[in-house]
Every structure is written in structure tokens, then in C-alpha cells.
Length: 396
Image 1: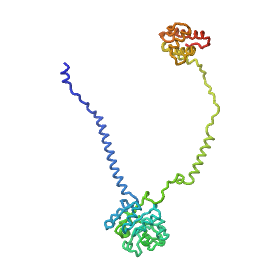
Image 2: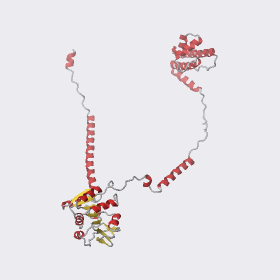
Image 3: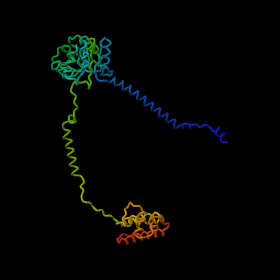
Image 4: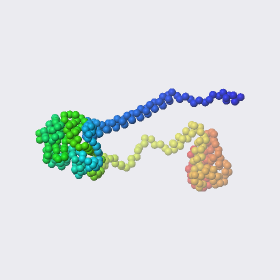
């Protein structure tokens, strides 16, 4: 009879996935895919933005302050543009063949490192000359303001003369320069001494300014004089100066340390003067004096109201066994049956009767509980009498 039933029993089928759980899983999958797509797109945009927003005068930058356009124009005119971010590698490239050198501001290079690059290059263009460059290569020339409109070359140098007007930015004093171009009063936009040229490239070479006036012709003429131009891009990590980590005291102004010291001292003085002083203990006056025995009386009333005679008996026995153990020389950790036998031996009583009082008799009514209490009190009184030691009465 059971075989046919087993044969016709339908095969177990896993319960279908609830629609709500399926929708939740699809939602998490869509969210995960969205986060992945956003991360990929963000990484691509960050890479593009980083390339476009490199530093000023960087030939890899397509931003307004970059010079990618000039680098591409130079390459289209047959000039090899080598971008180098290590000054030592740049020097090695300059030693290989005749080449022009483009140097931006180089605060991380020592005067000796700059001199080694300039001496190795066939021609050098300082694109953002700092005061030390002007002082060293143009005999104490100094920055002298900015031009607000395009300037004419007004000099005999062939490259500026062919280029014509240019949107020169920064101006310099002549100092001891051998050639000066793009004058504006007593200042000039281009200085030349031998193979070294100084010009504010931010106003001429950048992507934003290259198409203005004769800027492109001037930039190509200055950098395209040789088949190769080594374009050095300064960075914070490329330096020949000793690297020392400044201390916190060196980074902070001189007045910070004394100010902090004064604040700490003021805080200590305020804490001492305004802090709490601990005097003698003050006895709190209670509105009502509660006797210690009221706790036992309250507990007894609770037992009586609950009609729980066995529980009350257990409490009475626990106290009696503890006191009797001390009387007969046993410890508080000894079992109750051992205490009962010791009491029976001391009194010469029946062990079964003593065990009944201390262990086995279970009262069911209040009357039986009173009888048990009297029996416990009698045992304690008998033991005291036998030992001739005063004791306390058993509390009921």
C-alpha cells in the first residue's frame, strides 16, 4: 500500500524566489554596476583632467597655462621636443648633441645645478626667470613690473625682429644684458647675453597666448634654433639640495611657543584658584530613621503574603546551619548533612531527627513552618547550653 503512494508522490521542487527578494537582488546588482561605471568614468576623467591641468609651462598640459600647443608646433617644424623631469637626465641629453634648453623657474635646484645645465646646452631660454637667474646671468637685472599691452621688439636680434609685436608679460631691468628687446619705458620684455635668453613665457608660450600677435613666431624662433630642444619640467622631488624635515618649531611663527606656554600656565592657575576644595565629610541628615530589623520584618511579611512556607524554611535553615557550623567547629563551606551529624553527635541525639530538622522536613503550612522554626531554635539553644557559650536567638 505504501509503494504506490511513494510512486505517485510529486517530486520536491524548490520554492520560487519571492518577488520582493528578486527585486532586492536586482537593485543591489544595478547599484554595484552603477558604482563600477561611475568609478571607471571618474578615473578616466581624473586622468584626463590631471593631464590637462599639469603645471604651468608643462608641454604635456592642454590647459590654458600649459604649452602642449607650442610643443606640437615645434615637432611639426622638425624639432625634436624631449620633455625631461630629471635635471640629471636633462644634462645627459644635452651632452649627446647640440640642443636648446628650456628652463622654467627651478627653486629646487642649486645654482651649481642650473649652471651645469646652462653650460652644457647650446642655447638656453629661461621661461620664468627668478631674481637669482637675472642676477647671475644678466649682471644684477631685476624684475620691473608687467606690460599691459603688446610690445614691439625694437631691437636688432633677428628672432624678435621677424616675430614682430608680442604680448609680453613680465618685464625686467636691463642690468648688464648684451641685448634688450620689447622695451616699455626703462624695462624690457626680453634679455639676451650670449646663448642665454630670458623672457616671461607665461605671456607668450602658453596655449592661451600662443595665437596672439607674433607670439608663435617668437616662441618657435627662440626654441627651434636647433634640431632638439630639451624641455625641463621642474618638480618638487627633483632636487640636488639637501632634504631636511623641518621641526614643528621651525614651521610655526616665533610667538606660538610662548603663547602656548602662557595659556597652559593660565589654565593651571585658573584650575587651582577656581577648583573644588574637598573639606571634611558632612553627615547627611535623614528625615526618617529606619531600623535595621525592618528589612527582616518586611521580608517575613512578603513570605507570609506569598504563602511560600518551603522557601521561608530554606532561609531559616540556611541561617541556622551557618551558625551551628561555627559552634561545632566546622567551616562555612562544609555541607549541611555534615553539620547535622556533628550537632547530633554533640548532643547525643538521633541523627535522623536532627537531619529532619536541618534538611529534610518540608513544611506545607504556616503552622508547620512555626514548628520547624521552634525546632531550629531548640537545636541552637541545646548546642549553646552544651558548649556553655552565649549566642543569638534564631530570628523568625
